[in-house]
Amino acid sequence: MRRPIVAGNWKMHGTRSENARLIEEISSRYPADPVAQCIVCPPYVYLQEVGRLLRDSALLLGAQDVSADPQGAFTGEVSATMLKDIGCRYVIVGHSERRLLCRESDQLVARKFAAAHAKGLVPIFCVGEQLADRETGRTREVVARQVDAVLELSGAQALASAVIAYEPVWAIGTGRNATPEQAQEVHAFIRARIAAQDATIAEVTRILYGGSVKASNAAELFAMPDVDGGLIGGASLKADEFLAILAASGSR
Ligand code: PGA
Image (cartoon, rainbow, N blue to C red):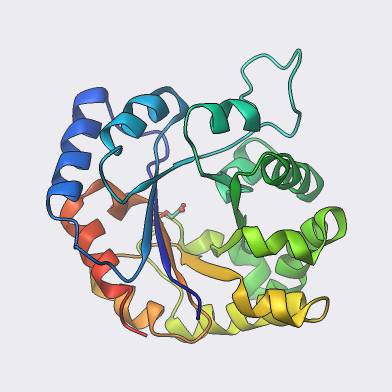
């Protein structure tokens, strides 16, 4: 049985006072025994402070990115050791915004995954096709290439302590989510790809869906057999929406 995860990716949003208000609103109405594990991923500069705000809650802390290198002359980068040091448990790697805007390659993402994993952080490893890929029938090819880069560098065993997020790029921030059937089809494909190397690991690996998840569509997405929760962008900044999505994680 895979416990679902609902993770909030705050992206480059928030201020100290907005963050405090959001965490207060979420934690004051947080269910006593939620089905899903809940994670919030604020920007780097707020990680420690949000970590303190979360201290007495069941919410866990994640970062949005990590360096592929352990330490050294990498101006502006933040290492896995540093994230661990300040109480992060999770880190997003390979988000499509970084793949596209910062030109992160499959190989760099795989190195970031390995760097996080080596320090005991749980990578939330994002994959997903662009609209042109989907329209030309290349979704599986793109997702396979992204997944294989991690499998080749770290091996299937590493996925036992990682989370995958399938996020079709055309669904991110657009209000146009994948249908539950489209999501299920790719999630099952990813699971089969892992199973080809290790069936036991494939069975326990959580695969989240991300891309325009909101309170109104979360339940039908999370009801699919291979969808183990969600990575939530815009809706994670609104306590009502985020809590409703968390409640929908009991739909399966
Ligand atoms: P969205 O973003 O929910 O705003 O579409 C999801 C993500 O980028 O992780």
